[in-house]
Image (cartoon, rainbow, N blue to C red):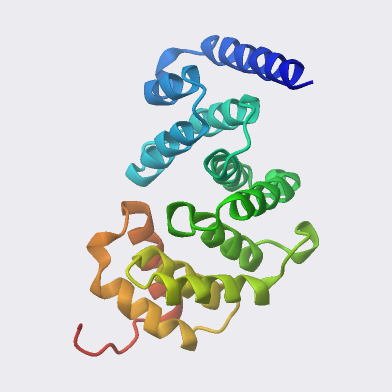
Length: 220
């Protein structure tokens, strides 16, 4: 059974690679291709995230990455997180057409968290908390906006040094129409803006435009 699953996964990977290679090479990032050829789901996810952070990703990159991680058969916290993260990026790309994949994002984030909740300082928890706040409740099974806030607030308490945790918490409050509690998190993000990725800095600017710039005291 295990051998059959591995053979099936390898066949899917070969098919995905063959399909992707039928497109002009410039469309899909070479680092994504290299990670896929190594059958490393996390490397595929990281390569995609780097392009997104730089603002250089293409729709083909996201579609390709999703095909790759879906074809890699593994059951580790890293692999499950990679599948959740890449699928989430495809949902962002597709918009309403991506709604059927939201359950897949939740499934793999829950799996990663169950295997190792401390993986990358709670990366799956951050993804899951954001998902529960942002996604329509009818599209997820194991949480809601209240649960999402609990997860994000817990991460801020556990890892206050990670600026992205504060950003996601602020995003959650503002998305729920309650910007006042977001002020402390926004202040942290303003004070440590340079620690954020380029795309997260853009998100911070959007949140400030929506909620207004809070009055922050002198940084510690």
